[in-house]
Length: 333
Image 1 (cartoon, rainbow, N blue to C red):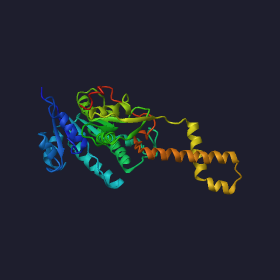
Image 2 (image 1 turned 180 degrees about the horizontal axis):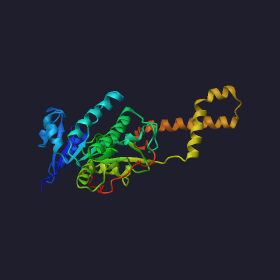
Image 3 (image 1 turned 45 degrees about the vertical axis):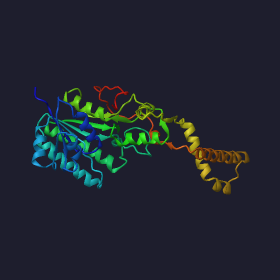
Image 4 (image 1 turned 180 degrees about the vertical axis):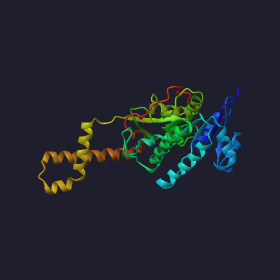
């Protein structure tokens, strides 16, 4: 039986490179990785990985696109205005879909950022307005390829990737460095918003083998918590990570703390214009001193705290791919 053909477009980023290594020894798939230039494809050449180096509109690349049973597109512009990036996606997708064969499959690598979350929008939900040019253009790309899919009889799969981890992923190397530097991690008491390159590979294979229907999927690991991930990385480097699980305050406590912070920052204005109960004023002064002492003690101890893994609340929205399975202890092997 002839192997099905796969082409990975925009493959020279960190995800594409690690994917190429994971597919390298596969005998079941006829897979090729695309690079725009020979210089950018040096990684593939050095690792004896099947690749093609040319602009996407080159006849050699068009030929591979027209033969492919599945295309996975990882391309994501890292600069440009809102309109410039939309124009990039439109021109790119028009070209790709025009040359794809009917009933073939197209997977678009989208992002959890498409939901509109950012450091100020901490609740994990689908926001009506985008939070950045990046998320706006991912939304545009998702919508446009759905239209092209219907028009050209192409099966569309959108993978909204959570924070991607793997042996060569920036997010993973950052955590390992922080563990080595003895940082104390503040982590959320919710599933981590993460996925792995090995799961992206498995998603591609399962889609190719018709184990998932066309649609939009959130690729995340709902049964993996941040402490699980930290312990896995710690084991890899023989260091025990330090972390505390930061409980979110109840809404009433959150509101009271917010009011207290306002009072604290405006204390001179309030004292200058209103008669404030002496006991209440003494309580504010005491709390202010306690906070300063705690901060001083913390600085004196030299505790380095990393709190970015505690910046969101809840669980990522969206449909999951039910065909995926993994062993968390082996997922980074």
